[in-house]
Length: 399
Ligand code: SF4
Ligand code: SF4
Image (tube, rainbow, N blue to C red; front, side, top):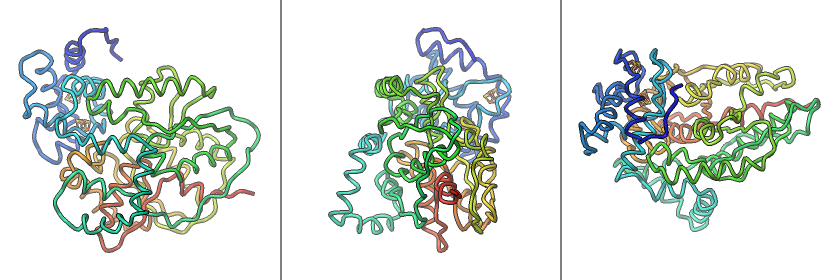
């Protein structure tokens, strides 16, 4: 880790970019390079553009910012880089320097980031019958942020709710759940499932209020909004009195860790996998395909723990999509800002799911799951999608 002086962002970007030895090993794992075959849309190309911008050799023109805006923040490049380039840091600094893109869908993101407003608008849409117009809008083929947002509305789960479980001794300590923004509305079932599984393993569980961690703003260059969100995270955590903070959304993980240096912030899979002896599951004869979101593979690094947990469900036929570069294209606000590119990135993932003949698709990130569900809904045989925690809690054998 480079020790960053509190200097101008231009200096920090130049220092970060200088770590790149331009070996090109990151190019084959970059989904946008795979999509466009263009050096500017590769990690090495973006690093070179950021360095040139920071040194004042180029201006912040639309053609400079376009490939930087297209970056998914998947961090496949960071994970593979032999020189240890801190690509995420460089991306955040560069986007902060450029500021939010002019075509950023700010109104939509404003709804996504406000759980109460989001929930209220969805209720209103159901109550007024406005939801019946959604299929007609989705039938149109023109890609737009609004069409993408409507396609991401959740489809109801057909699985039965998990049964509540009481605290199991011995006590493994206190953890606090971070409900997030979109996840607290669209993934409430999975958050309940996380609580239930953690209690069954022996943890005491509390929750923070639902609000946005700032990941969307941080990755879009909205620095002031991201700073405000980080402050809200610190305030909420200061009253938590827990050993660690848990999120069920891997996309929030690095932003929460950044806001709370020194605090253990994780997803629940490693904690649960450490106590497999306390968790028994009922049989489920089903062919399930696991999609591992890029942030789960590259930040949480909890995919192996999740696989160990799922393999405890007797008769579950678990198939896994290839490791990255299989990015589905959701990537925070990317699916709303570049719906056409997001659909093209998703095509490979959908084709793979179809080849594996999935009866159920699992993914831990709410954005990925809704984006995949929207793509699957356009196909004749549509397997349902679910958060892995919801499936695990549903199959939990409580005796
Ligand atoms: S792998 Fe690392 S050092 Fe090599 S080109 Fe990519 S970012 Fe630069
Ligand atoms: S974060 Fe992902 S999309 Fe962006 S440059 Fe790296 S590999 Fe490519």
